[in-house]
Image (cartoon, rainbow, N blue to C red; front, side, top):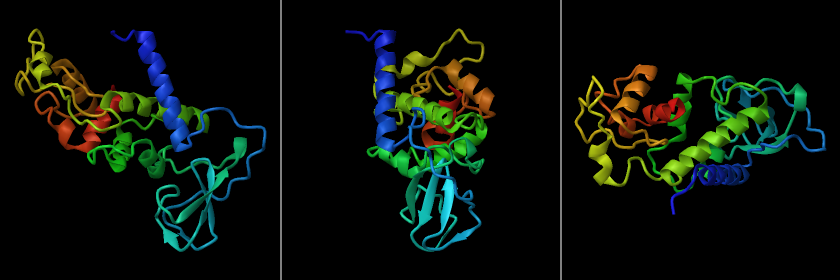
Length: 233
């Protein structure tokens, strides 16, 4: 039976909740216990030795051994000491993403190797406002909603391109004045949001400054471009 919009919305919300729970992304308000004070913000250029502390993305972290340049939450060198700060949390690194690489890996354990965490981080430069404004809870909610959507579209970031090849020739709207220069069957679903149709490739390309109408294959060959189309959509 076809899914109604309300059914799809319920499914997406449930998926978001599951992803959030699996990755430890808190989207609810703070609990009754007061959060610990935040240590000094983590700095990529600083050296930390065993027992050294830093705060990052709303958590305090403790170094297990010597480290420099390894983002807390992305490697085993850091031990998560729990949330910190509440309303007095020091600002996090402006270039950081609210979802760590470790959390991303937890969310999508079976994903295609094409969908790299670094590709997602690189794509954020095109949309710095995404999951980068508001308080920590708001940022995490925005990130969780987006990742739940791409999880739904790609079967857990498993599929890079649309699986039903019989649909490929259908995504060329010949009424558009710019036509389908890459070929009638070139505008099938690709990437984390499965962008399709020549007019969507044209609009996304114009917004991103990339000729996706002429070369839609970039979305299945360049992870950063693929993630950018997902953020654009």
